[in-house]
Length: 269
Image 1 (cartoon, rainbow, N blue to C red):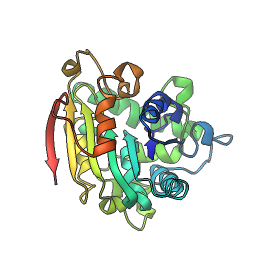
Image 2: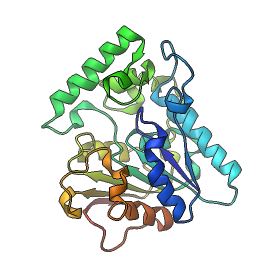
Image 3: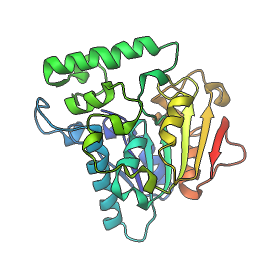
Image 4: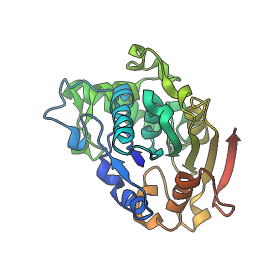
């Protein structure tokens, strides 16, 4: 049983082709939208209470509990895109995860952004986004073509200048962060042209999964004969034959093949 955790303010339907690919290889797959996003949105987001901590500690945890209840006897694995990798470590039921694959998953601290785009990204995500949120009561991302409309609490977390997740506004109300309870065999896939998923950003999040055997695989687009991959394109169907088998094998076996493209930057037992 595979649960796919979406990136911040990305509808779960974005991952439908990848889910179909996993299903075609004999795996049951569950997709879901975080509260306030896509099919989980109920009316206006103005004044709607939701945060990164809610998406992990409540929504992701609920999906893990549902998987354990509805698919008894099956191992539970998770694919987490961007924030979705973080969400897996915020769920109290994360200790049930067998294998975890993260794609571009990092802690969104601005100093970790790629140097060439850092100031532009800082202005966009930590300047314009919080400002519009204060004016509108939520972030009208869909109108701007910047992700989906996003609850103010999520924007407040993202826009914070904290270097640690436990310092974020929503995390201060949590009794504990369950990251260290997750013992899943973890593969972090990152791409050299992803301005969010720099090595420092990936490693910052991986360090939270202290009880998990962790492998960081970094891939350059040219390693697979491409010119660009970036933060989102892994889940495009054009990578079905080149990138998706990497995740598939890890989900099935918890290991990489000998001919995997890219470079293993770190292995932590």
